[in-house]
Image 1 (cartoon, rainbow, N blue to C red):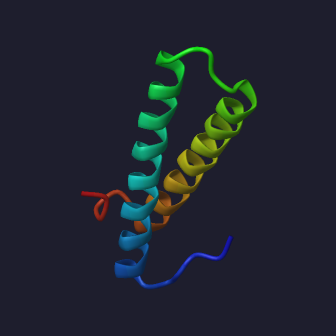
Image 2: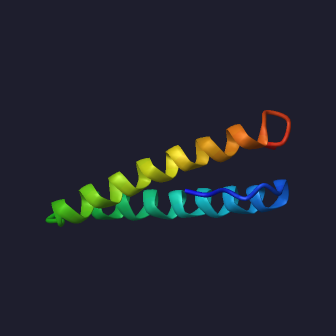
Length: 69
């Protein structure tokens, strides 16, 4: 994964990742609330959500504590 050097580009990427993470979380919740559900799809979605969480943390570390607002 190659991340941009520009702080504005990092902030845009961070917002995009957070948005995808929220959308995925909502989709997982809906899927879990309406059985029967596809277990393989659910596992893949949860794995993607964890990957996004890790990428979000990496971008936040690059931005530093003063730029995460």
